[in-house]
Length: 620
Image (tube, rainbow, N blue to C red; front, side, top):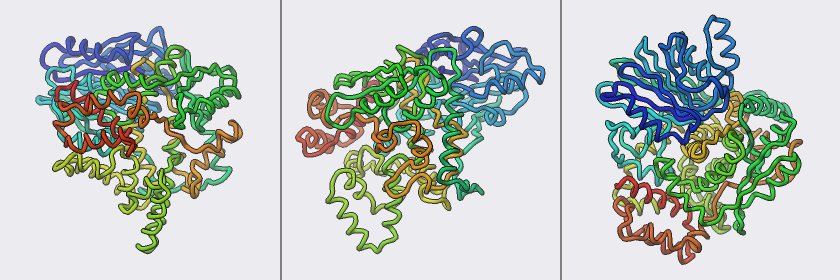
């Protein structure tokens, strides 16, 4: 894992600009740094050494140094690509994966190059012969890549927004549409950011800039959606589907065990990470280093006992960490690493989990992606139930909704927005601020996020003709996975120089899982059916049968007790920055109702708290 950066068409000293970018991204790659510099262009890399510790330091070029490449991530098929290049007469000086990209770029256009790569990556290639910059991002967006395009063909890019802002020509201006979008989603959807003009290269795309031209985005991969563009469901079900999933998952884990540095695994006690640990243990034949984080409370957030079951079964070297309320002290650090507000409070335990993991290993495998591929969230079952509810007469629908509201808890949460139908109800279930609160906070600006909702709606419309579950999985893959889950893990792990690999997001497994029929994944309230069947023999029955538990934080209690003064002094202050952009009255009421125990607003308060600290830092 690394940090990449650079610029083309820049006035002034490219070397000085590259130095500043490298300095700001050093946490992503503390082992080495280097740059490939040509007239009017420079690409640079901070390296976290994982493979080829001896000869793999940047800069990496082709034979005559006319093509330079920098890479963030891992190319899992680089060995086969390397052998093919050697057979074709190329001379390679390293044993790593970045050099493969430089040599492929000699003969392939950027789109064809990206299609040849299997892995998690963001790359930059500068071809001095063609005066062409190519930026590529992996298929599902595991690795980030931001850019800004200015006058005169100038383009600045980096793995994190702070690297883009390092260039003095890039304005540090707030995009006013970002705050309404943030209140809707808890993040600003790709390709937008909080900074006007700074954008993200979308997953599965390559951005190409040739001398004298404008940057052009090219899509080289999109997630398959059965029922669209001639894609059909696989004729697999039951045991056959489970065997296919198991085999693909084992191949995926094996590809991610290649490392010249110590390697371990996150272990939450859920089925996804537990399955990864089980397959790792069987594949390596030695104890796996496993890492778990939990809470000493009674709010149902502590999964350490379940993780221990798996650790004991496979004899892992197991490490644990307990999160206390003072862990929120890391919030300023988190804002600095995200470069934007981030509404998902599970960033706190993920950050601390990465910290303890990095003390022992440099690479960790995770279970991220299992819920996204195999429909592991309750909201998928709720959405399918909503679809069936829609077939009932209007009066019967209202009777059902009232019954759900009367039950309280999660059922009431799902019932309240159900009248909106899909995909709006699904979006509301993901939101940390419900629609009435969002509109109260935004006031007259409540409709200013139309562009974000239009993008969201367009993704839904793009899958028209597919089943409801296939459409929801595609929507979730292109929104929540990209902009919440993967952002969270990348920033919190790279803050500590830790590489996290996600076997469930292997392209072979992604394409297989998405092509399976909906009935293999969900039936009634039974979720992830095919995955549970695929790994049932590996795990204790209690782990296989457990309901999904999110990697949450007991914010409701923390903000009402241990951290009550902190949140009141920050968000409740008369000069709070958020009150320049949001209505003060609804915000103060939100705080008061939470403090009195009349409402549980912990997640909404966390979202607003990170926004406040971000606005203070930027002076907006």
